[in-house]
Length: 304
Image (cartoon, rainbow, N blue to C red; front, side):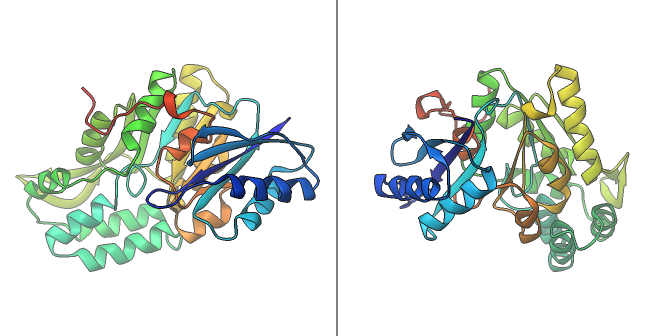
């Protein structure tokens, strides 16, 4: 079989049943595929269905139709090389819950103004670099102590630690590439166990934010370049990379990666991404690579 369709059920009360798998297999067979026996990666949670002789896009569409709106994510991909050797992850609204710049703005008293610009940027309505400069300018004069307050309240998305540490334990290189700021990215990368990370930097003068950044801005183009550079450093092709993110500035790396996953993404991103995780947590990024439940590192605590 040259392709595999992975079904992963969302958390909470969602579950993947044998009847669901049966319906998906029947739909894909009717669509012209040679359908193999189901392979359960995690009972009630994740299942592989090997398929041959049809296009991956058609497979996903057939599977989604058969699921009839159930809280199950579907990823179709080639069977060969599905376990990736590089993870390139976005931070805000991907590894962590929410946007740290929006959280900082809320404490600074300019939350609605900054959040409105963030929404436009993440949906690809305005240039990310311009949006970043406009949002940071609104923070001018605020005390730098607010940064520590935001960092203390960061909440990790479910499965973040497990995703990074499982891939790391199995030999993958993990990089965090964020349009956020170093004070938050350093903290998040260290807790999760990323090998390397890259971010923007806020300028601080006499204990106050100046409303400016220092150094180059991590744009959508820089995110892509960072992933490509990391792949070159460890000597792997782009087909061996996994990228995951939610915003428009993540699209170049999502589309260039061997597997690009739009994670609970903005509508503009979902419309262009080849694979979407809409219902599941970050452990789904492991199941779609073929990891089994007993291979996952049970880690929901900071890295040592």
